[in-house]
Amino acid sequence: MRLPPGPGPGPAPSSFWDPDPSLPIRPPVTDAAVREAERVLGVTLPEALLELLRVRDGGVVSARHNAFPISAPTSWSADHVPLDHLMGAGPDPDRTTLLDTPYLVEEWGLPSPVVLLDGDGHCWIALDHRLCGPRGEPSVTWLDAELGTELPLAPDFRTFLHGLLPENAFPDEP
Image 1 (tube, rainbow, N blue to C red):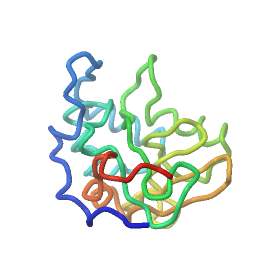
Image 2: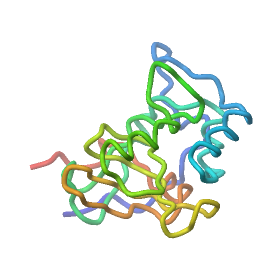
Image 3: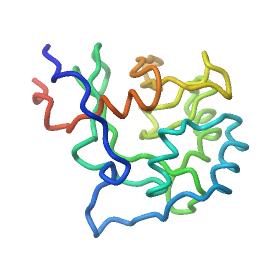
Image 4: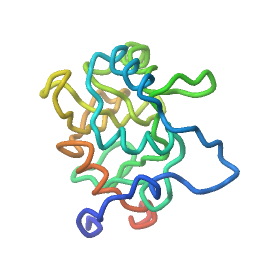
């Protein structure tokens, strides 16, 4: 298996989000919502994540940044994992947010402490605070709830962002 070239330059916060005007656009996260999310989650959120959420509090990721290359196959793919949406930090009755992490971790039997960023129940991309503690800089991990497996993706969220590529950069699955 051949992976695409190394990490890209990383998305600018304004180009990270899908520009399609037909998609719902959340306003930027407020400082009060960040404080409440950190209180509920019991962790400090990484600044690189907050930079994105200060542009838009979650939503669909641009097609230029919607996949991350992996070194070992997962149940999703042999060469990448998807990042279709990034959950916001503020409350939203119509969609899943970072605030839903405690419930989802319990429901799906996921390790803790993590903060779920994107996923469908079976598989998740998460900020992983298990080694760094609640105030440290979390790594980014792929969690497969059905298989009970994990795959480290990046040592921190900024490095994860710099590694994002378009999903169409990866060859079609055999």
